[in-house]
Amino acid sequence: MLRSFEDALTKKLDLERWSRGDAAERRAMLTELFDYASAKLSLPMGLLFEKPEGVDASFALADPMTGDIHINESRWRTGDPVDPLFYFLKELRRAAQSARPELFPPEIALNDRYVIQFDGTCYRVEDEWVSLVKLEGSEDYFTELFLASPCQTDANDFALRCLKNAGAGRRADELHAMWAPGYHLFPKEKAREEFMNAVREIDRLLSEEEPQEKS
Image (cartoon, rainbow, N blue to C red; front, side):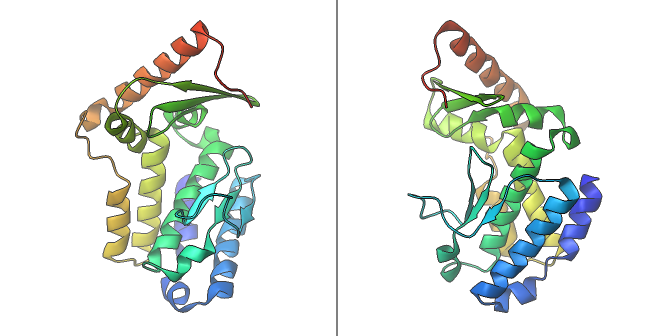
């Protein structure tokens, strides 16, 4: 199902129309893509053309609580035209991972419950509860672990495939490389083991003490 969905979505990506379109036309194009994905994958989240408060740099960002995808139109005035599409596609894939875990490998569903951030701050999601814990380690390590995590690599690869199959040039490869792990601190074949070690450590810390924060 995911493969046929990806192929159909890619056919709807008109890069020439996007490049020459004004803001209204681009909103219409993203809405069309999102509505198609929502219908095919039964996604419960929404698409909002407003940036979250305090966020200026991101082209697109998903609300961690509602899953809604926020599009930051102010970024459309700068950078390559491919940039907004790349980040939209990444967030769309993350939305699908969260809403339809049964369509993905088990490690992606697990990663959706165990969120690891660049500074070692981690979240474990259980039903409506979110538990927060901080792991010890360097920011370089956790940045690598975040970029190598199953959800992130899958979303990054998805965005690249869609754009390249739609005819995108070098910029799509550059964006993919920007968000791909360098595997400087652990080899690629050890990425899953490193992620599972982090999951076990999160569980251990949360079992030993009250979570620092619940929401």
